[in-house]
Length: 350
Image 1 (cartoon, rainbow, N blue to C red):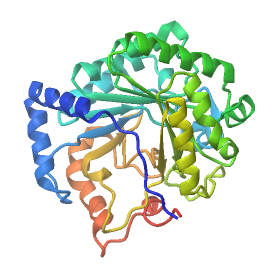
Image 2: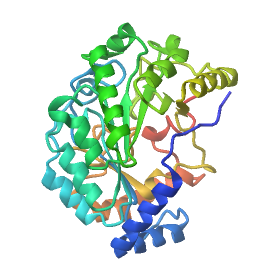
Image 3: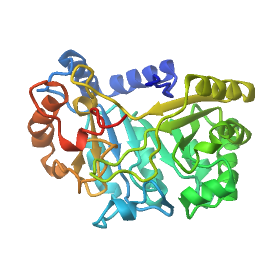
């Protein structure tokens, strides 16, 4: 049975106020946003993207069982430079929100904090996902809060040392606990609206701890947590070996929400997208994914230019305004066959 998503979202007033302020400070952004609203998801568009995933690097200090970059990528690519990042942010004047994270640990890029600070300085809503292992280095946990990043997800796929270290190979359970506590304690004292959230990807190796996660995360000072049931294969033919059938019930979700309420932590969940031609994917109408070496791919569910590559950012206008048109048509036109790499989201996932 398909259970509706209960997706964590920013505070609506905070988000809308920040977007309005950014548009007022950057009139071209406002004009771009108005053109987007007027287009109503037409395949042929006249505006630039509003949202973007920016991948600072494709390396990680973990070898997680479900997303090891060394397995996903055959070609080793360089880290994104701050100069390339700055160029993209400066030229993409229509952006409202950026997620600075891809396949890899963002903090392994030496300029990650500098990137976040620059984007925030442009009045962009900035969010990221981290594995928590490097937050103590040079007081990074303090710098993230001090620069005013808006959303930080900390990934934790185990509610015990054994499960965590089995799935997130290379991780140290005690270090994650310590760093999560450092981040949340500092944010509670000195933060100015930063939202921290625990994020767990449910898979075969941790589903037995389903009801234990709220207690672990509440004890670390999180006020929100999210279960992700969105295990996917990054657009590849291979199945993700850690994928597990969604066999949780409404009663299970109600129970875990009640546990969270008792502990003072709000519980959310997110399932893999399931689109149709009538209820089509909106991503290619408003969002792009920029890889570490400045290539454009469709979304974070693919996140790999070895699966599909629309081209280098140098050719962005042609990519976004021309190449993307047939891609958008495939999302919603009953007479156009969906791309193979999108079939996992269009009926290929139970």
